[in-house]
Image (cartoon, rainbow, N blue to C red):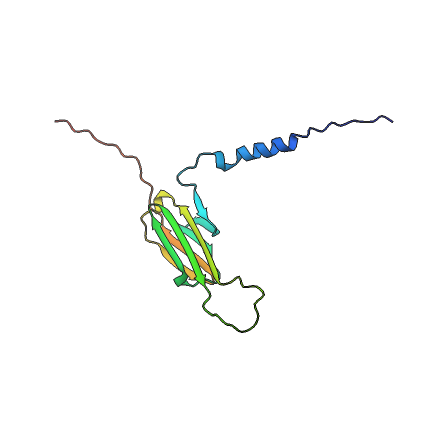
Length: 145
């Protein structure tokens, strides 16, 4: 029976990792409307001529949430602390004292200056505002003197 010898290139895996690294968005230019930052997962969609943003904020009250739209950037910040301090019992782990999440998202041009409607229901924050028509090119007439 004939032996088949297969040679393995030890650098194939490293090449794949390096190719994937340089293909990632870290090395691609960032466009003005594609950046965001933060840890709060959101859904953004358009329905019935309105821009909708939904964020899951379980355990947060409306007073714990700060929402701001400034120069085309939506900022959502939520934080709360526990108020009850008891000396009863012996603690093994205490992780619920403080919680904070945030998100900053660039909005489409058509949503910059619109009035925002915000609603918090069952831990889901829903933001909604009408989209404006995008600016259309227009012809400029030149006067003569």
